[in-house]
Length: 390
Image 1: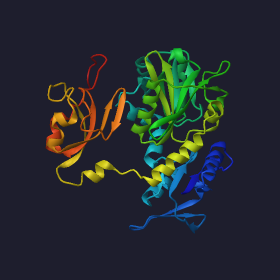
Image 2 (image 1 turned 135 degrees about the vertical axis):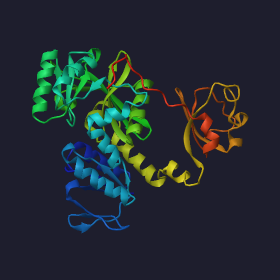
Image 3 (image 1 turned 180 degrees about the vertical axis):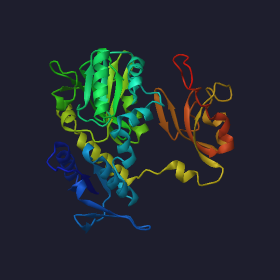
Image 4 (image 1 turned 90 degrees about the vertical axis):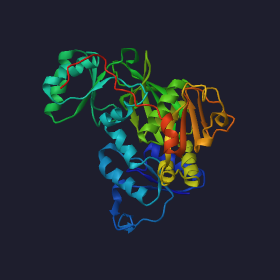
């Protein structure tokens, strides 16, 4: 496999480790400076040039795109995608995580714990925003801060208002987030590769510092993540479209709460404290994907008129509940079950003898008309309390 690591500094720990892991596995690997690329766009012939020369063929890329070059970096990744090169994280997925507001907006639709967060621009709305997340103390975050930079703990309402007004005056967009007291000074990172968590650690702030980031002096300790935390991390990464991700969570009384998802997670802290070869896991995953590339099932299978892919929920009826797939008659209705998911199970390509339970979520391919009755109704938006409309 020929793979390129997009990185501005080949001497960074993460870049070096990824290169070493690829070389040790017999792959051809190059470290290429993201800003040295140029894009050529032509009808049915997307191309990239590197240092003025036409780029040779690659099987895969590993983007290590710094926050300061997000726009240009994601455009380079997008061009690789147009050229049919496998990318560890897509351009859209990277963009989803670089904007903290966008990231939380995407996750908020799903059954994933997140800290209550507000975003306002009008000075008159600041007080209400603080109250809506539970009141002071609150966490104030710059939308595009990294490594703990731009994260402020405001102990009182007046301090929070003053900080937000000052940042707004400096043309900075900020998030106002609930302060989870029981997790003060610590968080959990799950390192996701593909569809599994390969390593986990707890980061603990030192001294009076409340930020647990390694770059802020936080100490890391290896952690065997509970299943609930693994499930949350994997689901968050999938929803955001990430194949490789560092998912940061708070250990709240209500379970895991996602506070940030990183599309270029550092390797030094987690490899050092766990002793796990995370770089090797990444390279092995990419090699497998190059050999067995993912297909857009919805796009490929929905070309046939009247057919498509849908997620169905097994109803609590005698026809389906505690019946095998064969007994339920699903296959007789021209529906093929691709996966079955329940809280403690995820099964691909289930046999006809698999016993269904009410509430099982089935990813199916079949006739639209046959599947229509099993598609769950859209949940109505929840409201905490009645408020006057606009």
